[in-house]
Image (cartoon, rainbow, N blue to C red; front, side):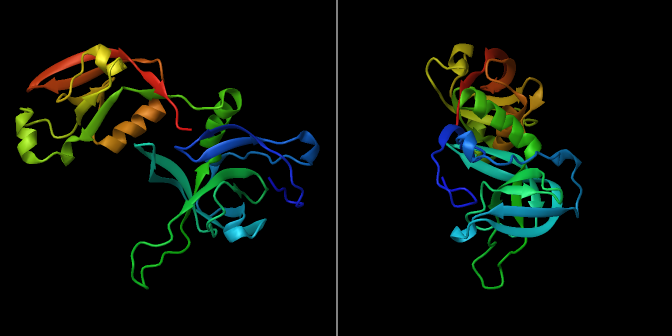
Length: 261
């Protein structure tokens, strides 16, 4: 990798997580003259100054300035067939291709976020271009992922071992075949169960409709995934409520684990 003073050095990848597009690299200590201090993203307020650092379009060491536009935005993130909603910081500091992975810092030079992505356009017309909307992973959240990558090289996330589809996406004729009570409007339809998985051992089958996990009512697939990856842990025992041919059942299972590398 190339440092700010153009010195090249070898870097070792300690771990990476594709779900949040984060990686931890190690370089020789002799190349480190100063260490950036982490700030506190939970204390940020709208209107505070924000500075984005990165290498947009190959222009190394570029710095752009703006403000924190929002401290509590959510955007969809997809990786390896997983979809979740993640909380991000919104800023109008210019973030372009090459900024991703760079630091978002406050006026004191503390890192408050990791530049993540930018909405470049919302349509195809010449009047549809969008500017001043960039996103960064809050440093309070990133620190948790970074710590796990440093110690184990990966982030273990819980797994059921099923293929599922959002009930609201199932055609009406197929929903009728599930014989669900009229009160059941949301849930996840199991389309396949992996052999020897936690779901298989608990007795779940294709055609079952999962409506709750640990008392948490499922509203949609992406909401369920977000809950799974942020509130539950691999190895945790959970209770699942589901419907089979119109009748309600409950089962318990111990969540497996998977990584996004």
